[in-house]
Image (tube, rainbow, N blue to C red; front, side, top):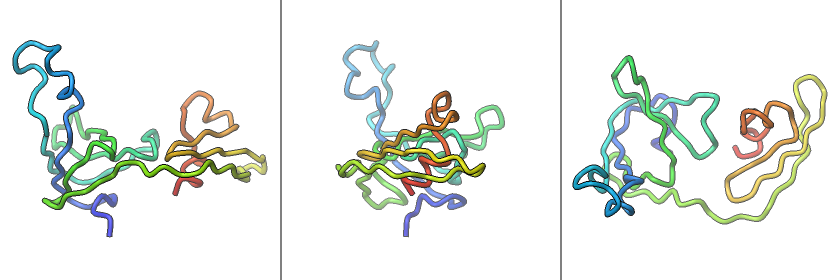
Length: 131
C-alpha cells in the first residue's frame, strides 16, 4: 500500500535540492541535507503526476508541493521513487465534450493535444494516462 495516498497522515524525509550546490551559498544558507515534514497528504489539480502535497498547519502556507523523486523515507521506511525508465506510450483519449486528443507519455511525463494542456502543462487526459 502506498503511504502517500491522499488523506494519510505521514512523516516524510526529503532531499534538500540545494544540498548538492551548497558550496555556492553563504555558510548555512543551503540548510540541512534532508528535511523532515509531517502532515496530511493532499492533491491539487495543478500538481504534476510525480508531485504530492503535504499540509503544513500554517494557514498562510497551507501545504508544500514535493517531487516524489526527492522523497527518501516515508514513516521511517526507506523509499526509492526514482522514475523508472519506460517506453514511449501514445494513446488517443476521448474528451468530455466528444473531442479526441492524443496523449504521449514517456518516463513519467506526458503531453496532450488539448487546449488546457497548452497553457497549464497538465490536464485530466494526461493524469488519466499516467494513472
